[in-house]
Image (cartoon, rainbow, N blue to C red; front, side):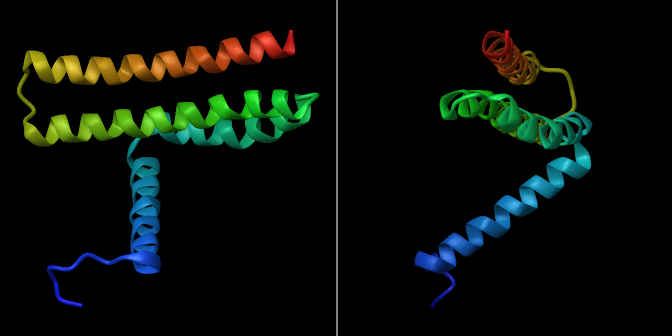
Length: 120
C-alpha cells in the first residue's frame, strides 16, 4: 500500500480504535472535568443499572452518563483547537468556548432531570 492510500477494512477500524484510545487518554490526562466525570461514571453506571427496574429505565439512566462524557470530549476538542489558533482574546474564540461549556451544562441537566424523573 502506498503512502497516499488510506487503510480500509480491519486496518482502518484498528487505526480508528487506536486514535480513539489516544484521544480518551489525552483528555483524561489533561482535563480535570473529564477525569471527574469518568470517575463518577464508574460509580453511576452500575448504580443506574441496579436502580433501573426495567430495561428501558436502565437504558434511560445509563445513556445520559455517556452523553455527558461525549459532550465533555467535544468541548475539550473545541477548547484545544481555539487555543491552538491563538491565546489572544477574540470574540469568536470566547463564543466557541462558552458554547462548548454550555453544551456540557445542558448534558448535565439532561442527566439530572432523567435521574430525578425515573427515580422519584
